[in-house]
Length: 117
Image 1: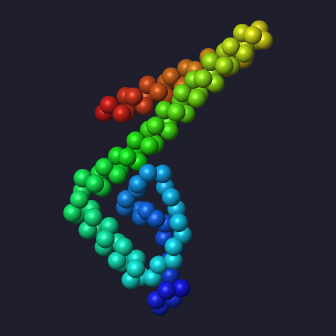
Image 2: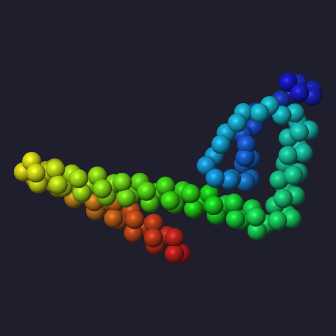
Image 3: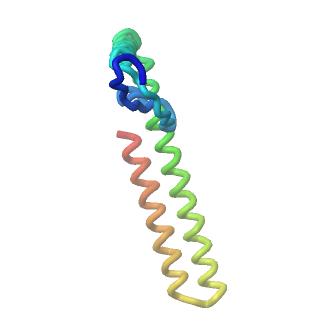
């Protein structure tokens, strides 16, 4: 415990700025240290808003890349199911694979249209 014994747990980065994948480290801070960190965050936002906006875009970009990767994985899995269904001469496996492929394509198209807005 630091200071007057009223330590709070804090995750870093703060709730105001998000940089990359969320790394959480539990750190006990005194109220004064918490106040100083909040002041530093506000000063950074006031003095360099372009940097803060860039960091927010970087996080959004990371999430978008993850979604695209998951959709590509779904497309590949769907195609494999279609091929497996053809190889096993099982209609329901092929239909399931086709539905997975269509769902993956719809998700990719939705991501592209929301990105252009």
